Image 1 (cartoon, one colour):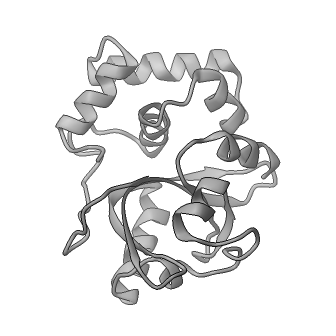
Image 2: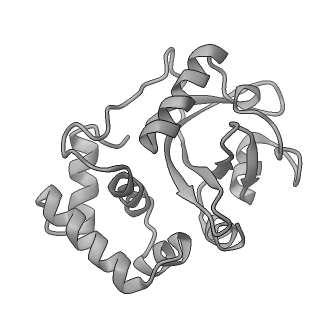
Length: 189
Protein backbone atom coordinates (compact mmCIF):
# COMPACT_ATOMS: atom_id res chain seq x y z
CA UNK A 1 0.00 0.00 0.00
CA UNK A 2 3.00 2.27 0.54
CA UNK A 3 3.83 2.53 -3.19
CA UNK A 4 0.16 3.10 -4.02
CA UNK A 5 -0.04 5.79 -1.32
CA UNK A 6 2.98 7.65 -2.71
CA UNK A 7 1.42 7.79 -6.19
CA UNK A 8 -1.98 8.77 -4.79
CA UNK A 9 -0.43 11.50 -2.63
CA UNK A 10 1.30 13.02 -5.68
CA UNK A 11 -1.95 13.25 -7.66
CA UNK A 12 -3.48 16.74 -7.84
CA UNK A 13 -7.03 15.36 -8.01
CA UNK A 14 -8.94 13.58 -5.24
CA UNK A 15 -8.07 9.89 -5.10
CA UNK A 16 -9.65 7.26 -2.86
CA UNK A 17 -8.95 3.56 -2.30
CA UNK A 18 -11.60 1.12 -1.09
CA UNK A 19 -11.19 -2.48 0.03
CA UNK A 20 -13.21 -5.51 -1.09
CA UNK A 21 -15.86 -4.69 1.54
CA UNK A 22 -16.41 -1.21 0.02
CA UNK A 23 -14.74 0.56 2.95
CA UNK A 24 -12.36 3.47 2.44
CA UNK A 25 -8.80 2.48 3.28
CA UNK A 26 -6.89 5.46 1.90
CA UNK A 27 -7.37 8.93 0.46
CA UNK A 28 -5.00 11.68 -0.55
CA UNK A 29 -5.05 15.25 0.77
CA UNK A 30 -7.09 16.41 -2.24
CA UNK A 31 -9.67 13.74 -1.41
CA UNK A 32 -9.96 14.88 2.19
CA UNK A 33 -10.28 18.51 1.06
CA UNK A 34 -12.94 17.60 -1.53
CA UNK A 35 -15.11 15.99 1.15
CA UNK A 36 -14.14 18.29 4.05
CA UNK A 37 -12.58 15.63 6.27
CA UNK A 38 -9.37 15.61 8.26
CA UNK A 39 -6.70 12.89 8.32
CA UNK A 40 -7.98 9.47 9.44
CA UNK A 41 -11.65 10.55 9.42
CA UNK A 42 -12.52 8.72 6.19
CA UNK A 43 -10.74 5.45 6.97
CA UNK A 44 -13.24 2.66 7.57
CA UNK A 45 -16.26 4.57 6.23
CA UNK A 46 -18.42 2.51 3.90
CA UNK A 47 -19.08 3.63 0.34
CA UNK A 48 -22.78 4.00 1.22
CA UNK A 49 -21.79 6.56 3.88
CA UNK A 50 -20.11 8.84 1.34
CA UNK A 51 -21.95 8.38 -1.97
CA UNK A 52 -25.50 9.70 -2.17
CA UNK A 53 -27.32 6.97 -4.05
CA UNK A 54 -29.74 4.17 -3.26
CA UNK A 55 -27.62 1.82 -1.07
CA UNK A 56 -28.88 -1.38 -2.75
CA UNK A 57 -28.17 -0.05 -6.24
CA UNK A 58 -24.81 1.35 -5.12
CA UNK A 59 -23.77 -2.03 -3.73
CA UNK A 60 -24.93 -3.73 -6.94
CA UNK A 61 -22.69 -1.29 -8.87
CA UNK A 62 -19.82 -2.07 -6.48
CA UNK A 63 -20.28 -5.81 -7.09
CA UNK A 64 -20.18 -5.08 -10.83
CA UNK A 65 -16.93 -3.13 -10.27
CA UNK A 66 -15.47 -6.11 -8.43
CA UNK A 67 -16.45 -8.42 -11.29
CA UNK A 68 -15.40 -6.20 -14.24
CA UNK A 69 -12.47 -4.43 -12.59
CA UNK A 70 -13.41 -0.89 -13.65
CA UNK A 71 -16.18 1.70 -13.47
CA UNK A 72 -16.69 5.14 -15.00
CA UNK A 73 -19.60 7.33 -14.08
CA UNK A 74 -21.00 10.38 -12.40
CA UNK A 75 -21.59 10.26 -8.65
CA UNK A 76 -22.60 12.57 -5.83
CA UNK A 77 -20.45 12.49 -2.72
CA UNK A 78 -21.69 13.56 0.69
CA UNK A 79 -19.56 16.39 2.05
CA UNK A 80 -18.85 16.55 5.77
CA UNK A 81 -20.95 19.74 5.97
CA UNK A 82 -24.02 17.80 4.75
CA UNK A 83 -23.93 19.13 1.18
CA UNK A 84 -23.43 17.15 -1.98
CA UNK A 85 -20.41 17.30 -4.31
CA UNK A 86 -20.73 16.06 -7.91
CA UNK A 87 -17.89 14.26 -9.60
CA UNK A 88 -17.01 12.13 -12.57
CA UNK A 89 -15.21 9.06 -11.27
CA UNK A 90 -12.93 6.57 -13.00
CA UNK A 91 -12.39 3.56 -10.75
CA UNK A 92 -10.33 0.44 -11.30
CA UNK A 93 -9.18 -2.63 -9.44
CA UNK A 94 -5.57 -2.87 -8.28
CA UNK A 95 -3.75 -5.65 -6.43
CA UNK A 96 -1.25 -4.33 -3.90
CA UNK A 97 2.00 -6.02 -2.85
CA UNK A 98 0.43 -8.13 -0.07
CA UNK A 99 -2.05 -9.60 -2.57
CA UNK A 100 -5.05 -7.62 -1.35
CA UNK A 101 -7.27 -6.04 -3.97
CA UNK A 102 -8.23 -2.38 -3.66
CA UNK A 103 -10.39 -0.19 -5.86
CA UNK A 104 -8.81 3.13 -6.75
CA UNK A 105 -11.16 6.00 -7.58
CA UNK A 106 -9.78 8.97 -9.53
CA UNK A 107 -12.26 11.75 -8.81
CA UNK A 108 -12.92 14.72 -11.09
CA UNK A 109 -15.13 17.29 -9.33
CA UNK A 110 -17.75 18.87 -11.59
CA UNK A 111 -19.65 22.11 -10.92
CA UNK A 112 -23.26 21.24 -11.82
CA UNK A 113 -25.54 18.90 -9.89
CA UNK A 114 -26.91 15.88 -11.71
CA UNK A 115 -30.33 14.46 -11.12
CA UNK A 116 -29.24 10.87 -11.84
CA UNK A 117 -25.84 9.22 -11.88
CA UNK A 118 -24.44 8.50 -15.31
CA UNK A 119 -22.85 5.11 -15.92
CA UNK A 120 -20.80 4.22 -18.95
CA UNK A 121 -20.35 0.91 -20.73
CA UNK A 122 -16.62 1.42 -20.97
CA UNK A 123 -15.39 -1.61 -22.80
CA UNK A 124 -17.97 -1.67 -25.60
CA UNK A 125 -16.29 0.72 -28.06
CA UNK A 126 -12.88 -0.98 -28.08
CA UNK A 127 -13.40 -4.29 -26.23
CA UNK A 128 -10.88 -3.21 -23.59
CA UNK A 129 -9.87 -5.53 -20.78
CA UNK A 130 -9.97 -4.38 -17.16
CA UNK A 131 -6.17 -3.93 -17.26
CA UNK A 132 -6.45 -1.78 -20.40
CA UNK A 133 -9.23 0.28 -18.79
CA UNK A 134 -7.03 0.79 -15.71
CA UNK A 135 -4.20 1.98 -17.96
CA UNK A 136 -6.54 4.26 -19.92
CA UNK A 137 -7.82 5.81 -16.68
CA UNK A 138 -4.26 6.53 -15.57
CA UNK A 139 -3.34 8.00 -18.95
CA UNK A 140 -6.44 10.20 -18.90
CA UNK A 141 -5.42 11.56 -15.53
CA UNK A 142 -1.98 12.49 -16.79
CA UNK A 143 0.17 9.89 -15.06
CA UNK A 144 3.56 9.34 -16.72
CA UNK A 145 4.88 5.88 -17.61
CA UNK A 146 7.21 6.07 -14.60
CA UNK A 147 4.35 6.99 -12.23
CA UNK A 148 2.21 4.18 -13.67
CA UNK A 149 5.12 1.75 -13.31
CA UNK A 150 5.55 2.74 -9.66
CA UNK A 151 1.83 2.49 -9.08
CA UNK A 152 1.53 -0.94 -10.69
CA UNK A 153 4.91 -2.15 -9.38
CA UNK A 154 6.07 -2.91 -12.92
CA UNK A 155 9.03 -1.71 -14.94
CA UNK A 156 8.82 1.45 -16.98
CA UNK A 157 9.60 -0.61 -20.10
CA UNK A 158 6.67 -2.94 -19.36
CA UNK A 159 4.31 0.02 -18.97
CA UNK A 160 5.60 1.59 -22.18
CA UNK A 161 4.84 -1.69 -23.97
CA UNK A 162 1.35 -1.79 -22.50
CA UNK A 163 0.74 1.81 -23.61
CA UNK A 164 1.90 0.95 -27.15
CA UNK A 165 -0.44 -2.06 -27.23
CA UNK A 166 -3.36 0.05 -26.00
CA UNK A 167 -2.68 2.71 -28.65
CA UNK A 168 -2.55 0.04 -31.36
CA UNK A 169 -5.82 -1.51 -30.18
CA UNK A 170 -7.51 1.90 -30.17
CA UNK A 171 -5.82 2.88 -33.48
CA UNK A 172 -4.56 6.04 -31.76
CA UNK A 173 -1.26 7.71 -32.71
CA UNK A 174 -0.67 9.12 -29.22
CA UNK A 175 -1.72 8.89 -25.58
CA UNK A 176 -3.63 12.14 -25.89
CA UNK A 177 -5.49 10.93 -28.97
CA UNK A 178 -6.41 7.68 -27.19
CA UNK A 179 -7.90 9.66 -24.29
CA UNK A 180 -9.79 11.96 -26.68
CA UNK A 181 -11.18 8.93 -28.52
CA UNK A 182 -12.20 7.36 -25.20
CA UNK A 183 -14.06 10.52 -24.17
CA UNK A 184 -15.71 11.01 -27.58
CA UNK A 185 -16.86 7.38 -27.66
CA UNK A 186 -18.06 7.63 -24.05
CA UNK A 187 -15.58 5.07 -22.79
CA UNK A 188 -14.44 7.67 -20.22
CA UNK A 189 -16.15 10.70 -18.78
